[in-house]
Length: 225
Image (cartoon, rainbow, N blue to C red; front, side, top):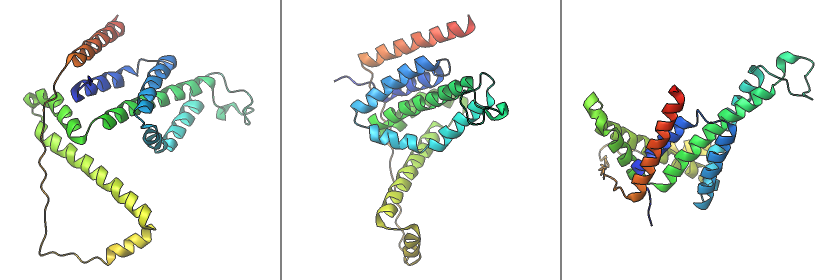
């Protein structure tokens, strides 16, 4: 079974992240629906839903800012419609939903990449993508090491939070931590080796990159026409 390698997936994600800024609400709905179908087929919908729930307050504030600060026709039957200064507009609601859907689309694309690839594959893909930048002075190896440490820290913190929720209240966990005895004489440091394997390209990768190049060319043509 053919599968696009991580480099092709990341390039596609970068193109999509840049392209969603030119898409309007109907186009965003089509792209986001396609990504949602992929997530459902991969049986990762519950995980993606949990990711979106973490941004619920951000989404709410985003809709409110656009709704109440965008001039246009005010929403009918608003309880405070008598005072037009605090009434949302239809144009604001549409602009807010468009921005929200752009963020959700980017999150969906990133979620798919994280679900289809391991941490090692992700770091390898980013390493080989940014490798040409070493001629501009970028320390790509240091970037890869810091990225691995960041992902490792996020995974560790997530595991600790799940353990704390399973074992009891935060203050009981804090009390247990104060009772721990730390051996300062025999410290063991774990060393981890990061193996960066260059992904193999197949026909599907070349076809996808060709399509992405065509889309990029059409985007530049439309932008500067």
